[in-house]
Image 1 (cartoon, rainbow, N blue to C red):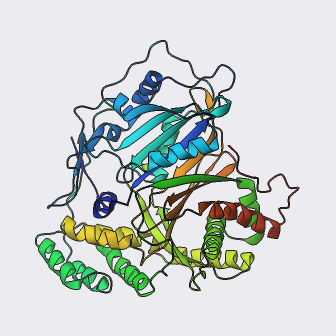
Image 2: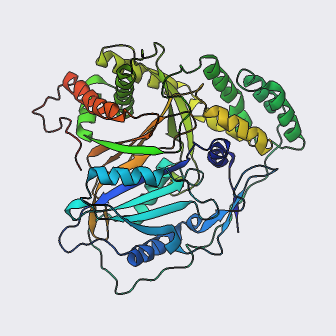
Length: 494
């Protein structure tokens, strides 16, 4: 049994196909301690452990029916007849001394490699040889399969809430992760009014060749029956995208062609410090996160002798649109907001308040969270050739400069094999000509800023890492969080 990719899921395949430098996988490095009698798992034990738990997620035993998009229909998920979990899970060992530098070097190389589209689109590595008896799990999953919030929910499935774990005497490697469940796709109702594909072509006339869009839209329009829900948001979606195109993102040195090589680093910040800032200055945790990243980008640009853009640096901020009943739903349940982050004002508190105000204004626009999703859904009614072109435009540098995603995680200690999870290093994908991205995950009292950069395009990444810490400290002082406070920003540690 198989499920067809949605237009939004297919976007992340198309972005890779359009440019070799785009890597559309998400992932994380999870670092564990060993306490008491707890010990790292063997490869066989990890395979058996995952095989049992992933029975609840049949997608992990499936592959794409076609390795590439195109033609008249999207690829489907189908059961992999050769699935063997031991091929998806492997081992690696860090060179001595197994500290922060060795882990980050290994992780950077791991995330620089694309997933094999002929196999299930996920991979996990048991990383051994960390100092102080620690070990790690590295995960990599293609964005067409799951989004950031969905990956956190999956994490709940494979991690435990207590240290109780009984090591079995034997381990088995299940051949299959489970069989797929068929989704029922109700027949869409025909749209009675208007010409949404024609409006799509007109809205994108400033960004894409109008003849190409119009011809492709007309070619795909014959016989298409449009769901009413998509049409409801189409007009607003097209207006939103057209408006963003008129007010294009500024060009920066972070938006040049990039290589295929990545560098991943992480900065940890006490979540209590972030909460103290938002409590004192107003706004939300997400406002603090956006403002901190904006300040770090400002510092990076200034260190290069580059004037921070007066209009701000535009961030694409993915927004979760999952319902309560979709907690373990795979695929993508996201849309995006485009937020202009102030980077030219020298006063950090003013920059913070401008950020909070801009974010609040966007959220107050009723259908804004449906904007990019609706455009992709409408484009999905046409042949994949037009959808691919629009997908590339939605991730182009003319619309945004940097991706910033903030995923709230569990505020309790989680375990695997009886070992406590101590640190998470999250990853956000980099689209073509986007040299920098930041993923933030909060977990067990800390916020982890996972900074992914093009290794060649951002050789000065350490400037930004230092600026992230300095920005939290700066805002913390403004909010009354001083150096003698237990929640004062601490230095990153291995």
